[in-house]
Length: 217
Image (cartoon, rainbow, N blue to C red; front, side):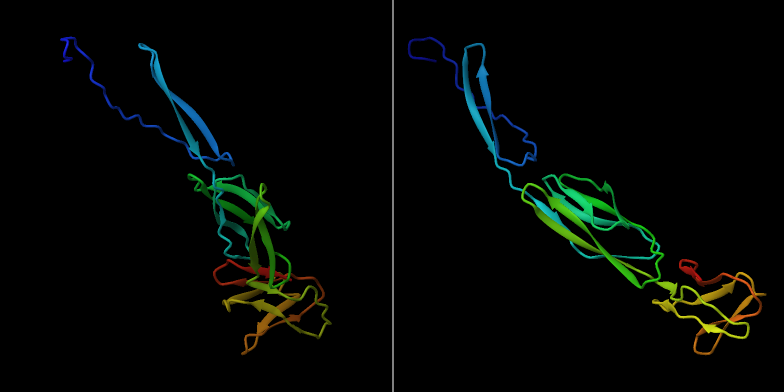
């Protein structure tokens, strides 16, 4: 109570909570919020400034996959636009998965390897265009099992030992599409030989016991 007997209103203190979204604009930003009492015509302004710090992180651990190909994942954490580019025609860019607040897994799709080579190497480029900052992830595709020979010409009484790669030393079986034309036999040192029986063009196939890898001559 005031000393003259009139009543006064006591001042009140209040706390107002503001929720601020993550700044993904690529620049600092600010806004002004006005708080007021329309009844008595009193207001005050509050300026909120939010800085922007670019975050661009890519897990550059080299990727490996076998000749069957498939999908690989690269972890990305970024609050800026990121472009992803394959630098090889046998690698394509898939979708984003495990998407969270500023992070995701980028899917990388690798085609099957059918060339008669032990491996091929490629890469995928992640780029933050605003600063031209880039991270390159290496991709290696290894061939587990393949026949190195591309063509074999046998005489009627000749035979040929196969030159083949079995990088994981898997148990393999060999088959001829026509044993009446050519047969396969092995020696004690695990070498495999094709022996002609009659004229023709049989298909010779080598396959691992688990059925995952094979090649044909």
